[in-house]
Length: 53
Image 1 (tube, rainbow, N blue to C red):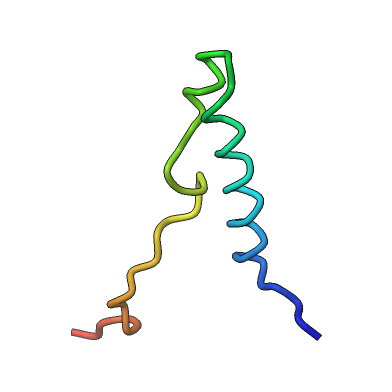
Image 2: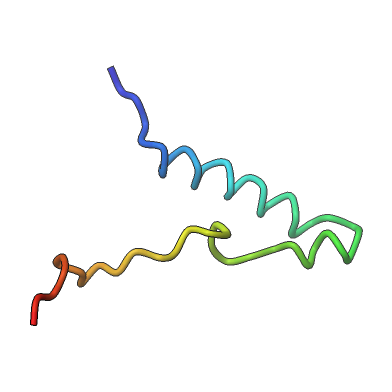
């Protein structure tokens, strides 16, 4: 049983949404195009957890 993670599903749907925005005839709609999912910061692959000083 393969159940995709929420982040995988969100990325899939946002990719489809972005593809539709790129080809939209309305310039105001095209301005909605963003590189990443709004409100979802990019993960830092070097993050090993909290740093305690």
